[in-house]
Image (cartoon, rainbow, N blue to C red; front, side, top):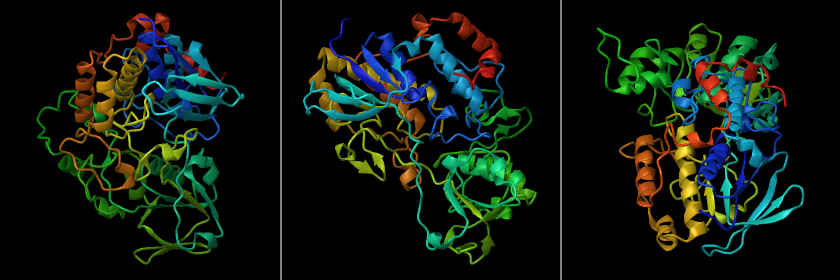
Length: 471
């Protein structure tokens, strides 16, 4: 099929690369722009603004976290570190020839719609001053670049150092200091463990109770065990209720000073960490309640207790932004743009987003399923086939994406979906329009360097990993 018009893909992290591969498979023309000098996005710790830190590891295991057709290598550990992830992403881009279409070191400065018609298009201005017209815009710029800094009473009086964890790189930065980490998401508990290991004193302030998921359950990676991808140990009666199972594995969290969990397992983003309870149990880290107010020397907490510290690190998440688009183009829900299926603008044709979704599952194959939706949208727009019907569907269709799950009522969970429900809805829509469900062999025809793929499967990434810091 010959298409008229091009799409613009912004960002060459995992989401952007998956979008490019989906477009390449269907021969949909596109240009691809990345503001940094290589692929990888946040996983390249050298990228300015990357939230990566030296102790960071993937929180889903290698067995569930590979790309369709390109699994993580056998030689990787169960939970790869950030340098291994970056090497894996680079190898993925090479294996499918995705670099060919990327203009590196070239940011998209601004993109504006040229009207609301089905084929109005977009005017994209690049950092080099060029302005180009495109039929569609695919935003794959990621969601962890713009730190969210909360305000607290008295914070302006605190005489110590205040920074967001986006600036944290290593536990070495904490030596000789008394450190308070605020927030217990996955990066927050990781960094609290860094503080427990390196700082003179370490504290973790949490607002609510969470269930802690060990990274291994009965010897298997947690996601492998919970998804029943391995046989259950013989002779053990394992509860079907994940709340009860996790409570049995971790015990009463309040004895460590943490609040009791106030929600069902997986009603929030899972906190996967096997070290946090170790450090709390050994006194290397002290759990604290939410902050009531800061003092010049530290903080008073809501239970009336007080601690002194000289470094406050806020692990308080990130704002969802698409910095090259006018925010007024969107309706916003608790800081999240309201999008059809968490992918498409409901009225501006040709505007799609990959990666702006939250779920309790490994991400990359789900992002690939989103990328196929975006390729389908581009095909419909460029050919005009069923365009009116599809445009109406994007504007009006509001499927249930949460199934029977009830998620925490918080801004973080505004765009949360239940992963199997979400997959089913996307698959039904793709099939309605004669589009494919991606799988292990969908992209075989694109493999340029089969030896890279074979090396990945066989665990032969040593050379790639050793060069992960090079350009």
